Image (cartoon, rainbow, N blue to C red; front, side):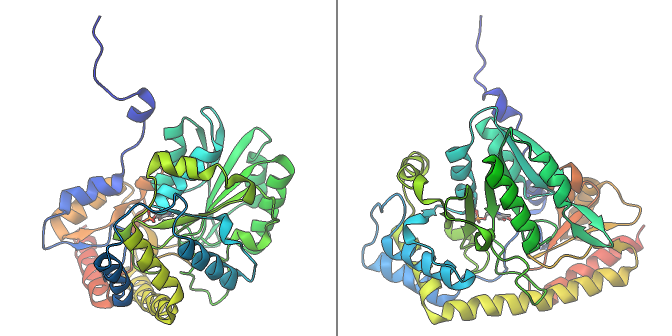
Length: 391
Ligand SMILES: Cc1ncc(COP(=O)(O)O)c(C=O)c1O
């Protein structure tokens, strides 16, 4: 008998990222206008980079506490308390090596193989694939389009959250649709989950990027009680343009905190001290809020440019949504998103993410990240128009 040196079946069954499949086809070509990844085309603000450089210069090159530097946990707790009008203790914060690592650690903390996890979709692939890697069964609950807006049928979601559900994962503002959640829906979901002991994992990495002039996407924590089974995921990647730093955090119920260091220890142990020093500057230096506001203003302008450009084609449907940094749209008569995305890269030099990367609900759609200078967006729209004109 021979044994083949291959991965276990659960890993083999994971879906590889279709965003990467398209990007890999075009990366390295200098003529591509790329909007496929969810990141700004500008580097991290200078004052954050300087804080990290200073820490490196001073020799901060050693392991740190599993949960992060006390000063950073304090800065995060103060920031969240200020933002949401709550009193959050720093003991409930765990610094992680990225938002995606925070998601995986949260899954490892509460999910066992065979558990049922409900995920609201379409959604960034990592959110649904992480629980599958742990061996959980993932049930997808799709958003719908009502009156031209992405909408969550909260009543139906609650019906899906039967008492045998271990975890529900929400992501609002949502990647890829931009969907944001109404406070009354957040409350209803929390109340239902409280009654049945269902864990709520709320991915709020886009919480600062809402364009409706209200706090529509405000954190689930505003409606939480201290002993709720609620875990929040956040990240420095989006609001402070720190994607390459790989720094995020978890906000967890206090009774979990004695066990969390073990799980972080066996994943990454800790995050680099000098990167954490940059994150402290992002949260405590007054330039930090200025940088977030500037990002939001430039994203707002880019969003208008893109949505106007897409509307002007007369062949594109973009349901309304108020948050994140993406336009999620479909082209009339072009249902094969992978084929369209491949043709756009190969023949028109336009790099978009295929909607099916976000699950079967995204089939036929395309995602455009508008965290780019308006002139780049305009160039992208021109290339899309050339594609549309050719058929
Ligand atoms: C919804 C969502 N959650 C989490 C992340 C993770 O971000 P990072 O791992 O860079 O912190 C992303 C990144 O695109 C995202 O879209």
